Structure formats: structure tokens, C-alpha cells
Image 1 (cartoon, one colour):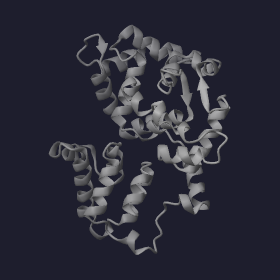
Image 2: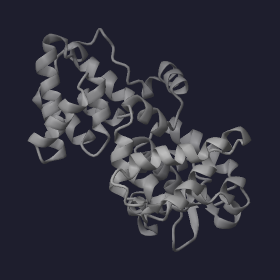
Image 3: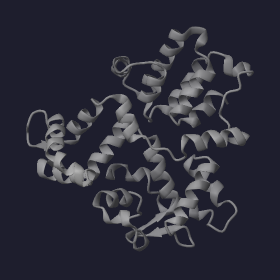
Image 4: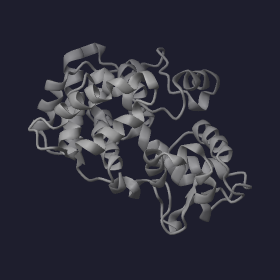
Length: 305
């Protein structure tokens, strides 16, 4: 996951702490603006960050982290280290937010690559190391007898040419061949649980992205400009999931990708195709609902400005 660390760890010269501190009234709002998360998410995660034992200046030290049981597990420790500033050896609240946001909003393929790079420090995985990884998953005594069977089955999937090692490409390919619903469920991560987000939206109008059916704009079919704005927002995200929500299958999604090299053009073509297929039913409210289901709330804002 090291290649993605630059998306998480912010240089000190650009950090939020240059403009605020935990005692300031704008601590939450400054972080919300910087990370493009809403106030409720940042407020909830600040509580979690404090529970982890952050210092008065809003940082977690490696010393504090080392006292948590999760830190003793090598795999968990590798995840945590992606949040650490290598210069200060600390995790700032901003980096904590950015790391969790990456877990929630990154493309499916990026998540799979990130997982692979943490399994064996980014190196190819021989079978003996893969067996040790599986042992960490199957920790219950009654499951121990199934480890060899699981290892052999999975290794055959991920090393189909029997080369004796799993590469990043073969790992990603094998995972992508799993049923989409299974893979999505396994990799799904929510900053706020769905029920909590829905409750928040129902009580706080400033966070309410739910379309009002009485609004003519929301009943209207979005024009090219609106679809362009949405495509720009979601081009670097897991837009395959959005396409699935709009009833496109994998074959159709791959066709959009093969016909257009630029990710924004791929998404734009998919959205135009959805609009053409649905006709008068391709209302902005329908697209907004699909975007919210994929946690692309920022795209809803440009669809319905």
C-alpha cells in the first residue's frame, strides 16, 4: 500500500495544524474542509481518535499505538503504518481521516492492490508465506483442520500457471473473478454506518442530500453539463460500482473502458448511455440516489448544485 501513502500523509507545511489546534472552535470544521468529509463524520472520528490516546496537540505516537493489542498483529501494524508520518513518527488527526476516507472511497482495484502490498511487503507471495497468512484468518481451533484445503484452493486460483508464487496482478485478477456482491461486501468500509447516516440526514438539513420529489430540478433528466460534472468527480473512484447501481453489467462496463482511454470519458459515456436507455425515467433524483449509495456525495452536490 506504500504507493498510496502520499494520498494519506500530508506534508507538515500543508497540514491543518498550521491553521487550527484541538482547543480551537474550528478544529472540526477545518478538518472537514481539508478532507472533504462532512462535519458529522469528522466529529465522530475525532471521538474515536481521542479514544486511541492522542496527545493534547492531536497526534498519536508510535508509543501509544504499540500499547494497543491490534498493533501486535503484523498485518494490522502494516495498515497502521500507512497513516504514520515517517519524519515525525506520529499519526495526525488529518492523516487518520484521509486514511479512513481512502479505505471508504478508493477504487476496488486500488483496494486490492493495497491489500496485496501489505501481505508480504509488496513482494510476490510463495505458498509457505500464504499459508501463514491464512492461519491468521482461520484462528478458531475448529477451523484449523481446513487450512490446507483453503490454501490449496485459493492458491490454485491465484497461481493458475503453477509458478509457485502469487503476483500482484494474479492476486487482483483472482479477486475480481469473485462474485461482485461478495467482493463488495468484503471490501466495503463506511465512515458512518448506513443507519447512522440516514438518521443524520433525516434530522440535520445541512447534511440532507435526499432529493425532494417536489423539486422540478430533481425530476428533470440531467443534461450533458451535469453528467460531465459528475464524471469529473467520480472518474478516480470505484465507478464500476456506480455503473452496477445503474444496471450495467461487467461486460458493458468493460466496453466503456475499451472505447475510451480517459477515465472521465469512460464515466461520461456510461452516464450518457444510462440516460439514453432510461429516457424520461433517467431523473436526477435516480442518479443522485445511486451516487449516495456509492458514497459519492460530493458528486451529488455538483449534479444538484
